[in-house]
Image 1 (tube, rainbow, N blue to C red):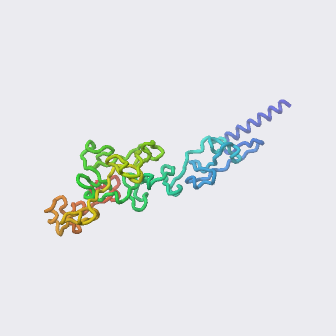
Image 2: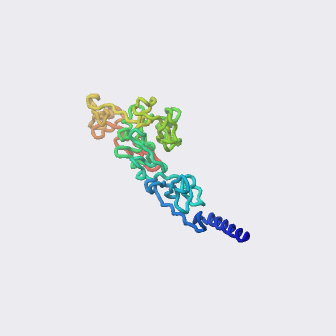
Image 3: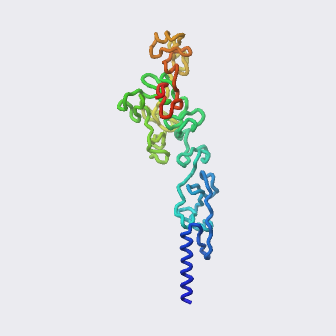
Length: 313
């Protein structure tokens, strides 16, 4: 009898080893039968999984506190019901597209995050990622009214580079802090320090264009040279309108789109005023590149080139 007992015990242990290494089933505690673990449902985000499950790179996984919460064939491992041979549920996939996120949040690196309004600018690759009335500037959705098209939008000493009014430069040594000289303009540096707000410290909690920025509700709360863009302090590259009516301009000027422009009938009229705006275009003096722009935004240029003063470079 002892020998038979040993034999049955050995057989039981052998069965357990086989089940553990098969990866296809789990040994049921009440007997020697096996149960095939339920397959993980493919998912694109938490909203595509049933209640009580979360989306991971392995599919929808059931959460648990103990193995009694799990279906037969699985055990509670690390808070998830998994087959006995699986030790990792996979990386979280809260979302893969904006439609997977609730309440208008956006999907950033498989995480849902609020943006826009007072939550900081939404991240973007192109303007199609942004809401109506916004343009993608340096990786952040910005109100189109805060985007320049021409150097004349920017005021003295500045140029319009990829929608941003920036100081002209020969090299980065002359550029303000947080900017670098690129193709003749001191453009804000796009950082690599963050992709999500959760990666930023409490003092600068908003991730904008790869850099952690201070939170704000008004321009006055931001450092000099910055402005409050949808709840985050960023470098001020907005156009600088100088009029709201003709009465704000000289007698030989008109207020056009917020800017005082000289009236003209011929190119000579403009050249006698200032050779730099020596082209008469649509009844107003303009530079030759503004009158006949090669580009007004980066999207007008070949891949790898920027729109600098209405020329692709």
